[in-house]
Length: 372
Ligand code: NAD
Image (tube, rainbow, N blue to C red):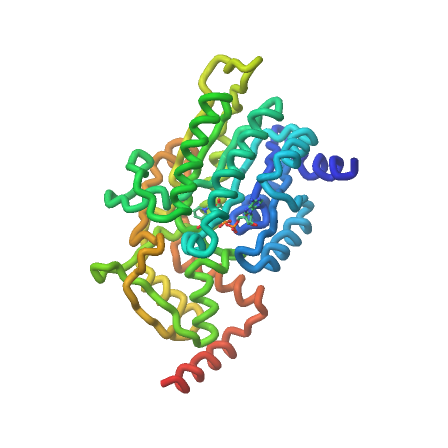
């Protein structure tokens, strides 16, 4: 009973006409920022996260502490636990679900391929089932797909109309499967579903498995970093997107999500439920070598670089978003360039890990000299 009380407290909006959102993956990077932004607006938020150890769980705990300091409840649990999901939808009539829980990252598939299927396909189905079946009214769902669905697409910038039938990684394949499953739940159960294809998101409280994060760590430690070139010797580039821009996109998608039409006695109610997919990127790809030179300038340390040909481990050479659809439908407009975004990341990084930048830079420079 106190569990239900806690959920209601956290889920109830504090502003008139506010929304109430169940956020899966709430202690993840994007989930933390979205939770805080919604709460700040006066919306209700309840988080769900299984705190898995794909990367440092203490970072997830710190994010949870931050959310708890803002009166946001994060429940420890798995999206594959359909009993738990049913209880959550029973405890509160959420108007929306922001589904961010997933096995992220591309390279981990070499170690644990099944984890992608379990969370990104099995978990997604379990969540869609719970939303479609046990909740009345059904919540509108907004979920994280990925720019990786464009795979080995060569037409650029990537538009939502482009082909997505050549995923380069298991991660991409499971996100593509998610988009197909979204179509099915929309068609059969009248579920309103919006998929967001994020493009390489970075910023404070970010993910230690992503390049900008582990490059920062290695550069500060005076350790070498590996930079990939394409098989043709070209630059690898990403449409790096700052977290605040992605958060604005998520809120825009939530605010324009229509209610599900739902089913009545097994039959679909009149009217087609919404089914949408949007790119959320920055629209200006930057070579990874440029990312490194920005970090070197911000940290005051030269990186030791190993430049090697990209192995075929699932990474794609290039991403570039066309965001005109999101711009038209919810005025999405990315405003943060890579240098200002990385400056905010570095500021957070040194504070979080208690690093004195000048001393660290001097030590890294000394270790560089020793190695020479
Ligand atoms: P993240 O790993 O920081 O967050 C995901 C969270 O989900 C983690 O806290 C994890 O513990 C939780 N989780 C994983 N499996 C779960 C399960 N089965 N049950 C409950 N919780 C589970 O990743 P992120 O960068 O915040 O990404 C959020 C979403 O955006 C993911 O779906 C990811 O695939 C997608 N995405 C991210 C990026 C990016 O650049 N960050 C790019 C494209 C897509």
